[in-house]
Length: 459
Image 1: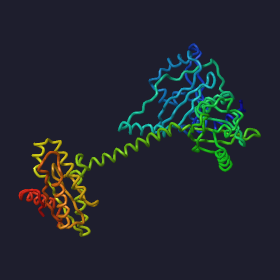
Image 2 (image 1 turned 90 degrees about the vertical axis):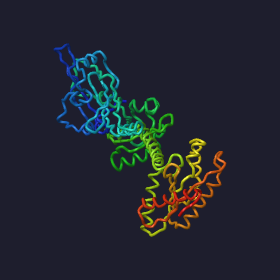
Image 3 (image 1 turned 135 degrees about the horizontal axis):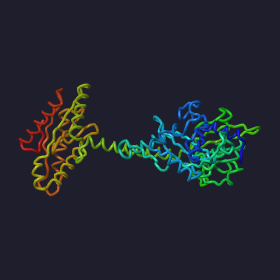
Image 4 (image 1 turned 120 degrees about the vertical axis):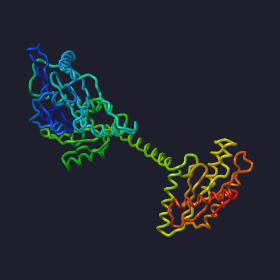
């Protein structure tokens, strides 16, 4: 369907991504070779995305505007020779970074001798991609860019500076964003571009003359909401919505809608930016972030626990003791600690091997845990020695806990050791001294228990 020129002009003025058109400069003295491409028209979005001044850029050459694409490595003479041989082309996509902004340039040829450039801001998408790379590889990674061939276009020997209705029409049809033109009241499709058909899986004959709700692309409630927003605001910009494809799949996107008056008719220009890839990348990023959170939890646990016994490691149990001493001093509470050592542990390793020794350590640790309250703390102090912290516990009650542990260890059967396993325990109540002094006192009591024959408690 062909619309009047003023409609396509309205399309260019209202779409969210930039559009620019260039015509080619020909050197007739050099066998009609193409010298360059001169900018002849831009839309407001192009100016906004590039940050350039319209008056300053009109008439400038293509390589000047996009030095990141047409850089010093660009062989202009060879490029134009290929242009001559290649003829008309399909659209080609290139990444371009301007300051902190990533832009996607889509080159297409609406008619011989004219080069169209569609400009899209993909900074958010590239940021997500970079985050995924960091999550996957543990560090910043330079984004891989498309290389490929440079733009190949055909050029007639003479071309008019004026852009015809055909150029506007082709710009609409070849635009990579989903675009459609519908009636206002019934939302009947009058025209759609190729991206619309390709993404949603319809043929042109299936769409033209039918409404969006009839095709199931938009629900009746969505259509009503769009009309209400248009009547209230005059236009819609980047409204998060979903189209439904012919196969019934949801296509997430950002919908912009303009109400355009063409003579006596109200028409809707719908521009739908497919964000399925961005949503997929966000979901992938969230999944990787969740994996990282779970991994961090594991690493945090590993950093504070003894890998063999599952109790706190030496550093962490000392940190816990320091905290409990501070709490006991602040609130004038009782605090008792015990140092526990497995008797004759070296001979166990020598007689049965280190694997059996590890089993003994694990079993003793389990007995300790079974006899403690939730507020009590136990850690592997080193080798076969354990530090146990009993908050809000005086010496008498602490001794009862120590005796339960000693008795249960003695009664436990360990592998083939007939005489069983025993432990010696040094027990002391905190008296306001520093942590080092308190540990030293418990340690001295422990070694007294060993000197007095082992398998006993000294306090």
